[in-house]
Image (cartoon, rainbow, N blue to C red):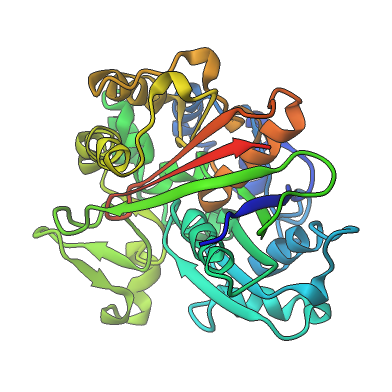
Length: 382
């Protein structure tokens, strides 16, 4: 197997940054009053600004997910790579523009200059971007591709506008004051998710100029065999934990039940996310890839809210893998929670920060509550 290197990173943040005070004007107001849950959710998630592929004046979309992702892919071009050289395009997202065709071929369709290539779609939620990266990396490691591109992209705003939600949510809001974890349920996700795209260029040699990252290993773990679905869209959760898919609803029921919007079982999330994705998954990964906490120079954890930072820290401490706060790196506060694209944005921000030195080891962590998965990746700066 050949070594794999991240030779370039490109990210796209659509339009201008949206502050907390301007969010509702862009997404739209539900009901007759401004959303009172917004203040509670934002106070706890720590996000100060985010980006939407939405015109703030007309509240109409300015880019599709595929177009946003294609823009990030184009940004990888330079002296060492042009799109006609693209061998593999692996695209991950939780918010494709359509059910079918797959997101990967739709992104490829936005890139006519690329010519023929292998295009694949990795579906999921937050781990979809890491799954795409793993797929692309394996094609390079196996000698099947010289230039592979992995992407993570989201246009969460497409299902967060007020038109997508029914007005009957007052009972949820009243409960939020008593139970902060309810901020991750249903309509409250409106104040946590945002839009962006990221793309990585992978090859079998470091970049000729500028910093490169060697991809030492990447592992994905699923615990779906032991847990029911926790975060889902296109379905409603039944009392026995099974999902009732959107095809089993009458057309007029889909909007009324919110079946097409993202939902999250917050009780299940609160109970299992750290235990499974940190305390169980990381020791399993380290058994395959020995690593000490003091060897990690930078820890890039994807978490949806500051609410979970302390809990992740505690989980790491319980398994004897405590990483000091000064070695954590996140840009959640500036760009928000962008699902599958978040880890791409963090890697790009770390490289641009000038704080990465040759030999530094970077541990990336992406948990997913969909049906409980975890992705870990170790990089070494070259």
